Length: 123
Image (cartoon, rainbow, N blue to C red; front, top):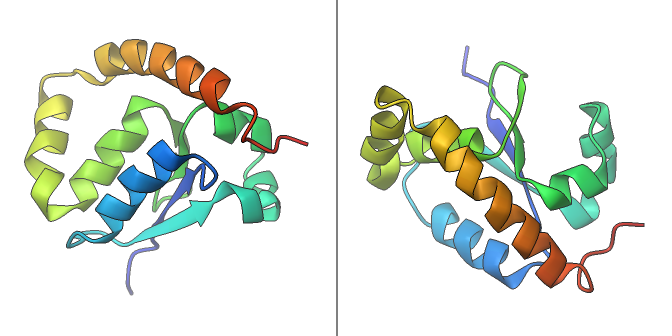
């Protein structure tokens, strides 16, 4: 039986997010990823007990075991699923860097959300 795909929620209304996700989409995957555009997936978001505003403010994913994760842990999940980034994903896990990266990601995510708030449809 094939493993379920990771679901990665991304802000498809954000040019920065789109550029990054489009880059990832072009790469060879080790693990299947379902890229979920936030603007058209409010029902999927709600199924996991999340809100549209929460996933706009901070990257979220549902891993292939059905667990909700967010922040730097999502990037580790993505990188571990992509051949060119797998080494980086394994390295940050081995060095226990996810909490450190998450500390910095928190500030970046706040800045990105404020910057794009006019473009984000949170209603």
